[in-house]
Image (cartoon, rainbow, N blue to C red; front, top):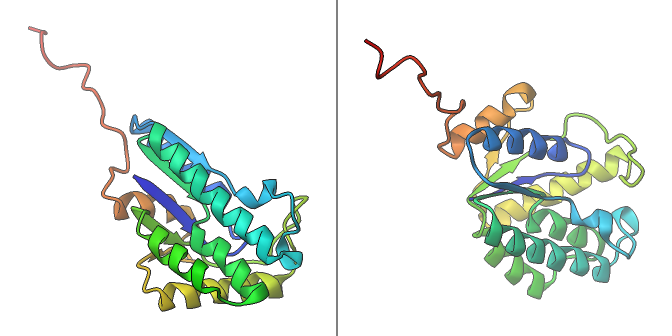
Length: 188
């Protein structure tokens, strides 16, 4: 099972990854998180990104997803390939080779969840804090989702506290771990 949170920067994807991982661990699943690979990119990112930087990010994302999926039952991705492609499209426009790669790779996710923009991003040492840039990326993501006909669940901006439950329900997973009844059997 591979789940990805889709969305612009600063919308809460990382927090959601850790919250969901915690809940999946309680369901006794082996879980790994593919963290946002852009943070390790040796090239410029955010508004200063380049075609080469985004190519590095996209390919690194795919490699890390492949590696995680070979070792864990559940893989949670802090972004999908489509999100990373959105930054490339925003900077240099669509590229045929990345269109093909992105559309092909998107089918590898068992669940895609679009995280809405609720507030401008806060500075975390790396994240771009421009609300305009954040919204522009969000629009490109929505355009790519529509263009490539990628099915995804859109998380309710008015129910942030219920997002993890919404993901679990959409994935057909229980909201609570099964309980062992300690008071059955053997007692007379």
